[in-house]
Length: 405
Image: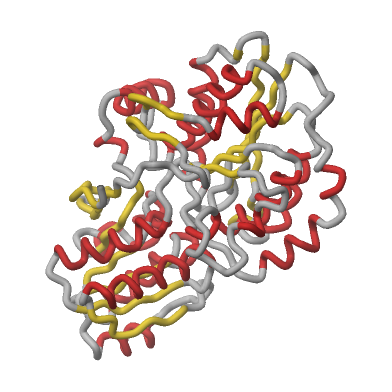
């Protein structure tokens, strides 16, 4: 998942230049019997409801381990990468978090980020420090897959040449085609594509456009929006004249997806609205309004919603509800799995050493885990390719169909 502005990479470069040499030597010293795991997620703003459930999932995994792995005491620190001034993740804060983690010899794993743009900032810093990073939510393809992003991706995020970044969710080269497949299954002949001009949103929208053109779904237009605009009435009036079967939005709740849907309905469009996992959070329904979202909003998600998990996944949901007296949002189980991967890697490594733990994470192969059976490939991507299509019914997300393999 998740958004960023293309310009943040240059800002990140300025912010981290001073600390890279120092952080490259981090990973020794500290308390020999204490291992710190940190998370860096937006804890300020509307994403907080989702990220709270991710953090809860991480805590559950550590609690299940009794707060220890072998002779090591595991400490978890919940870091915010958002700021009050932005109300969302902030590149300056994410850069500071990455440096702080890289330079703390007790930190052996960095769980994050939520937003793909934030990952672009943290990844090279943590890579130079040989500090493993594992994301529960990033989906931008260029973070890991050569030839599927910018020309310098993903090498620019791997200055040491090692793979230190991993993710447990399917990337957008799977999500985009799944969205097109689903629109066609629902009888769509045309789509108008919008994006928030950010890393995650535009990248995904571009993938949808390319796939639609190849699969015979007519693209009536594609343009970027101002994600801070108060309303989009004139835009929707223009689109209404074209009568697309779908409006596809590459963006997130935080980049005004709810307002787009409200203005689409207000303009009298009969189109359906489709958005990616960046909107698969309760905050999206609140922003759009339940009555407006009901039956009109369609959302793709990497995997299945919590209520459709089976086996150990269903056990996780039950324990979560007992522990927190509430239902987990979609990414909670991914936070839990991230923590489980780290804890298993620490046990396998048997020592407080970033390189040993990195190697153990890379070799992860979970069988019958909360997300089923899966492993990381050579680029740090999950082998999971299953997606789901979800709607909104009675003000709540409603599972509709499985997508992908």
